[in-house]
Image 1 (cartoon, one colour):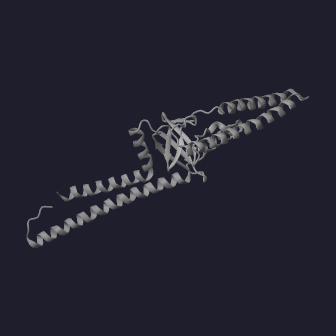
Image 2 (cartoon, rainbow, N blue to C red; image 1 turned 30 degrees about the vertical axis):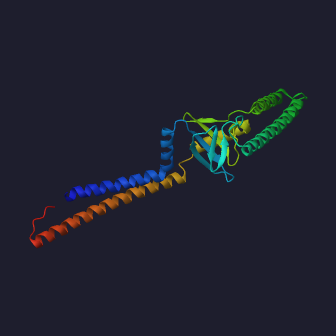
Image 3 (cartoon, rainbow, N blue to C red; image 1 turned 180 degrees about the vertical axis):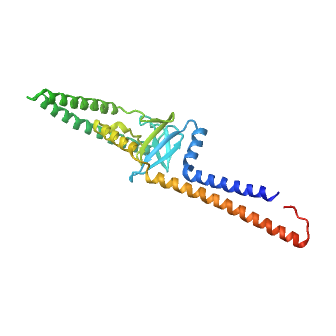
Length: 251
């Protein structure tokens, strides 16, 4: 092997390891999840939020309608608890009753607001105010109808990339529905947040990641150049040594 081939090999290996390190450092978990999604077509995306509002992402295949994560059961359908132990079934029913109580409380609050607006609507006010009040009353009616529908237990799952996705709170085995408390005001707030995020420049984290990638590529290039320099230097030293000894050396 001549010196030029050695230089190319050192440069290629150095660049290869640098790119591999950058890829794994930036998207290592995403790559693992992508392989799991490919190899486990019956799996589901599971998102669990803890009390500190950090969300963990898992890709799991439910066994008998249950995900086992960190020793805790998370069920896909609250109506099917046959495969649970007596303790787990009692725990599930406790959370189901809490959810039902929470929904009924909110329905009562909305119904009270709706009735107060109806009383105001029937009072002596102008047509413009009546139009506004009627829109609010209609909104409350729709929300109450949706919440009454949610009182009938059903499988609360979404879909991500054509696979089922479930959302849980840590320790709570009942899947959560994002739209349970979704209101017209929430919709306007979300639209405003999305509009601001689109109009904002790239975040500082993205800029720092790009800067770090540039530094790593520059470092890999410098390392390859140093390897080439020392290879040329060693080749010259070997040539001098061969000439000094009077040996016929092929470089």
